[in-house]
Amino acid sequence: MEEKYPTKMITKLLSLSNLDVYNQWVRLQVYPEGARRLGHILETYIEPVWLIKAREWIFSQEWFWLVILFVGWRFGSQIKFKAREKVGWLKKLFWPIVALLIFSWKLASVPPAIYVDEAVTGYSAYSVLMTGKDEYGKTVPILFKYFGSWLPGLNMYYLVPWIKVFGLTEWGVRIPAVLLGVWLILVFYAVVKLKTKSEKAAFWGAGFLIVVPWMVFNARLAYEEMIGMILWTAGCGLLGRSVVKKEYLKWGILALSLSTYTAHVFRYLTVIIIPVWAVIHVKEVWNWPKKVWWQAAGIFFSTQLFNLMVINTPAFWVKQVIYEGVSLLKIWQNFWGQITTYLSPVTLFVKNPDIDMQHQIPQSGLFSWWMVWPISAGLWGWITKWRENKWWLAIMIVSIVPAALSGEFISVQRALPLLIPLSMVMAEGLSSVRKPILIGLWLYSAILVGRSYFVLLPGINQEAWNFGYKQLAEETVKYPQTTFIVDNGRNTRNYILPLFYLAYSPTKLQTEVETNTLSNYYFSGKTFDDHKYGNMEFRAIEWKADPCKDQILVGDELSISKNQAMEHKLTLAGEVRNKQGKLLLQWWKTNPKEKCSKMLL
Image (tube, rainbow, N blue to C red):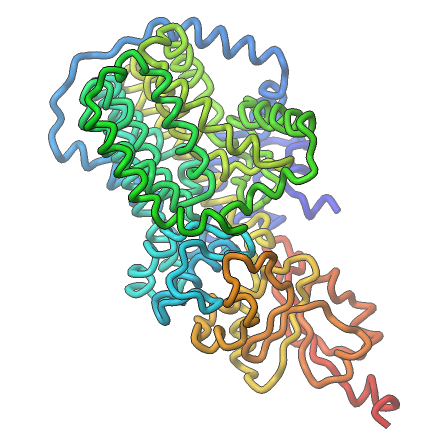
């Protein structure tokens, strides 16, 4: 069993030399072809195994909190910003170009396949493009059913023109996120400069945000959070600046209000942060003219019109079901446990605790491990000068609240807004560091991200990224008259993957949807587990009946074992394995004449 978990096995082999460790990785085929030379450099010279193991131990110790506090006190009190510097437009374009290169490198193949969340986002946008309706036949929905999550639709509509240009492909659904990531770098630069008045802090802060693992990960996937991150960051920056220039208030309110149409987390954040802003700055804004408040209120409620149209439906409140029948004590225990987990040094700088493997980068925390000291230094600077930074401290606290209140499971996607305030304190923590050291640290961070994301990720946990369904979709095209029964016992959402890869006709699919779903769209509740379209059925395999029909059965080793295949006279027609040789997906042809000849008689 150890061979299935090469990372854990190798980190235990502390007696091996660096070269031996590298050879272990090669023999286990963790490195994809073409990356072994890079992998050799990164694993054996930049990050030897003993350092990885030692770092995990140090960051997991309780006393490490004291070290963080000491580092913050030692360096945070020395943070000083230089006067505003003039920077040419070529220099300002440097980081956006670097971000574009990093975020788009091998975009279609890293991660190794499309995850179901990306597929349903892309297919929903494709369906709107082709028919003006989602996959269920709802015309221009405000909320998309999205496996029963009822996702706000702004990101779906943003994807539509890109799919028109690039098609329903890995590149077509991910390149919009790349461009959003570049825009987020620019917005972050502007917000940091607005706050600190320091070109150095803004410039290098934007540069290091590019190589934060958490940022790289989300800027390359077709998830809905990135467009919300831009609006949230801009809105918070404008709202903070409005205390000085009150005309910024309406623009800040507009950005925050629009962010509620991107993801559930921003809906809650907006509702919380606006009253918090009013309380924090009550002395400064108390005597503002009524006209300013009426304008802000008008912008907010007019842009919330679509949310108000569905606010009385179960779809709008779908996330609240986690609290049904839950005691206040249990909610508090979950909340405190989530807070301490998200803010743990292990989570932030060593290892992502998310239960979903497709939210993780191998051997990496949300930030690179060395970033602990500039973040702690910058945070100490905020705390010691809390009057100047009270708004930003409030944003840091509020940004983690929705994620901590979202149930028992850890999901770093819900905590993504925390990326911005933590990156801001890091930018300030690095403001007193000299340029040669900053260049060295940036290159080191880029190497760490390159190792974890571009070298290790494509060869580890491919099953978490639904690897194999593209090959299956291609197989169904070869045999259009044959029915494929795809087991969905452990993944009821896998039906969306062939829809994506085949660019299945939305018009045809909409005729096969349950009529009750469309007539009561925002009240239709839980989605159906079984699906049927084209020559494919997604359901549990019926072992008494299915082997007696001329068709193909699809599943993994748990769905269709070798003993079951022998018992039911199945013939292996194809399979997909990961880099380590683990079977991910297999399809077997039935032999009804041999298996069920007596029954047929």
